[in-house]
Length: 91
Image (tube, rainbow, N blue to C red):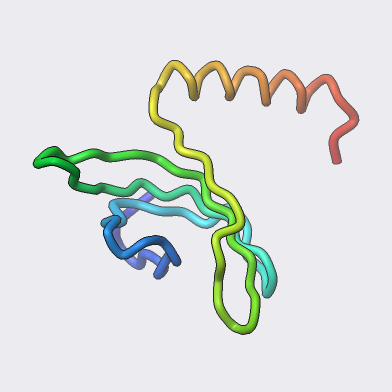
């Protein structure tokens, strides 16, 4: 991922996009993984978030999002997802 040519992700204006990459996008749905930076009580925080937006009336609306705040949580989730993808009849 690179800071160059970042799309204009429809996220809250208080968040600064550091990096982002679209996973899927069509005329109705958009999914992306975005690293953002925010400031709260004099501290700077960075987080990785998986966003899913839905297009309605010509505008993107956030349908859901999942923050990935800790590396060990991500590793556990990744292993579970990988296991289920390999052991289930997933299309």
